[in-house]
Length: 223
Image (tube, rainbow, N blue to C red; front, side, top):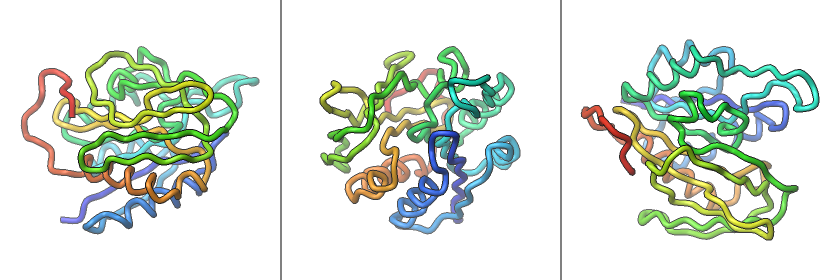
């Protein structure tokens, strides 16, 4: 059966079409074809109800600039819908801005584990991956995200290094009967389409799309 992948991309600071192209390239690398659709944020609740195999969020919580009145789309009810979808066997990828400006105490961030703190101006960033199936290192011009975590119940597989310091850039874990991953790279299209970055994100998506266990984990487990 063809698996279904849904994405929500783009916000005030990020070009949705670039991220959509990024994901199309990654999905084209998979061994089996998938059904892929990029949807507007307002259609997310309906998409969750259809239980796709994977949802990718690459949009921050702010719908307006920081300097003006904020409109945050993640309501407690939407957060509950997302976590319930994953608990019942769905897979979720928080990509780049999909971890930005969400309340740390929200169910969504408690599920995702990692959250954006800040970043300096774009600079050369070195990403180092220790996944056994895809060890790699690459350098791109990028926003060097500083990422925090609500707890340690996840597997960190990607770290980032620059003149600004170092941080975590990729992680994954089980949640209920589903799977969750966070992946930081990248902000612009050149970094997105860097070949090793594409290959690594493909490996992450492969893991998210694997058949999930029928066991409902009582605790968060490292993936």
